[in-house]
Amino acid sequence: MVATYLDHAATTPMRKSAIDAMVPFQDVTYANPSGSHRFAREARKAIDEARDDVASVIGCKPGEVIGGKLVMGAIWRRNLKQLKKIVERAN
Image (cartoon, rainbow, N blue to C red; front, side):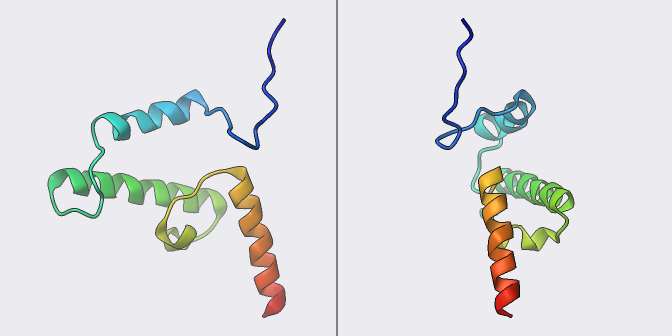
C-alpha cells in the first residue's frame, strides 16, 4: 500500500530542485547578508537574485517582494492577493 500525506496545511514537501538550490546556503554560503565581509556579500547577492526571480514570476518589482523579505508558499501568495484586493477596494 502506498502512503498518501494529506496534511499539507502543516507542511509541504519540497521539490528536489528547490532542495538542491538551498543546500549551498545551508552548507557553504550561510553568512548574515547584512554583514560587510565577503561571505555576507555572497549571501546578499543570492538573496537579491532570488528576489529578482520571484518578482519576475509574480509580475512585480523586486523591491515589492514582501517588503524586501522573501516569503514563499501558495498560501502566502493567495493571502497577499486577497489583501491587495481589499486594499484596492478601500482606496
